[in-house]
Amino acid sequence: MTPITEDFINDDLLHGLLDVKPTQERFQEVIDKSMAKQALTVEECAVLINASAPEQIEQIKEAARELKRRVYGNRIVLFAPLYVGNYCQNDCVYCGFRKSNTAAVRRTLTHDELRGEVEALEDMGHKRLILVYGEAYSAKWIAETVQTVYDFKKGHGEIRRVNINAAPMSIDDYRTVKQAHIGTYQIFQETYHKETYAKVHPGGTRKGDYLWRLHGLGRAMEAGIDDVGIGALYGLYDWRFETLGLISHALHLQKHYGVGPHTISFPRLQPASGVNIDQKWFVNDDEFKRLVAILRLSVPYTGMIMTARESPEVRREVLGFGVSQIDAGTRLEIGGYSEGKPHQELEKEQFAVGDARSLDSVTRELLRDGFIPSFCTACYRLGRTGETFMEFAIPGFIEQFCTPNALTTLQEYLIDYASPETRQVGEKTIDSELTKMPEGVLKDKAARDLRKIREENARDMYS
Ligand code: SAM
Ligand code: SF4
Image (tube, rainbow, N blue to C red; front, side, top):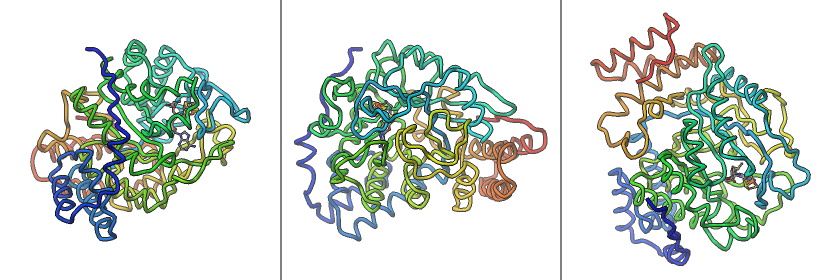
């Protein structure tokens, strides 16, 4: 297949869709379509963006909460980022790793140091990581680091899914990293607005090429990586335009490759070493909540990731609007998990973290707020990814697989890594979720698996 190179972001068209006040009837139609679990068009997403009356904004948030509950239930998947190297040939004005930041302390983990980081993460209880790299590393080396992570096991500790956030590659290079059995390949476009893109990514740098990045995930799909994640860095340009950009990107992937993005990320700009950015487009908390709810309604079946860039308070509130994955216990310093420093040193990190709580404490809060923290990695390991698999298209899938897998992986975590307090509230949640399952073989199997984990020290009981 020839890679698709069309520029599917039409700035004028997207701008033209903004500021068109929808009638109440049209607004309701769009909400209804979304509640019927249908993906919205870019024009329909704009209807939600342009609906700015306080009662409409409330309705959007309420609908997003309800849709998330119907599609995903109350599971939240947990992961951690692992920064492998911060050398970078680019000069993105917002990033602490940019080439011209001479204050940055540069470091690339050796394989031994990487194993040390993985050991610390496994000791916390993590099963899923995203490895993060500056743009300076070969596909071969990235693949080797992924392998090192998978290979390191300690006691019941093992990393079962390794995702990647790295620069866009050529199709051949994607093939190389695919062979290391990566999960999701994530690339953020940062901003979909070309003029802003050119301002924040100086010409002459690799990242200065807007279209190379825009088509980065299409090339990944050409190489057979059918699990990809998109994202925009909110705060560089108008949040409304970026949201339309994300939806255009999701629809483009769906149309051309038969499968949309597995995840959408919506990081907000954070302070970073030596970074001084015009605050004109910074997104405040109210706008942030709105945009998360609008994304949820626009792509009902796409996972949504909220990172520890946000504070615990914001995360707690925004979770309900449709987020399906969060990181926890997060450290951004290269070597930061094994070296365990109490405070951030911005010169060694990409940006400031908003939520530095431990995995145990985040897990406990989730449980207390009625969520099921999940460490499940089953779909990817059983090949249920991409075009051949739409978990949500299969009736009863969540009840059959996701809930039991969430409960068994949570139970493993509680026994192996949690504090007594977290274990107590967690096991109560598991028992009450099990009671809620309809009588039948699925419930019997889940009860049996949980008993095996609790009483016979069995692990990794996924289905
Ligand atoms: N070098 C690769 C790239 O640019 O695609 C890896 C990405 S970078 C290490 C991960 C992401 O962090 C970037 O895509 C960007 O969206 C985000 N980021 C960079 N600077 C940031 C800042 N100051 N605040 C919040 N997020 C930031
Ligand atoms: Fe390098 Fe990525 Fe930071 Fe840009 S965002 S300077 S490419 S690490």
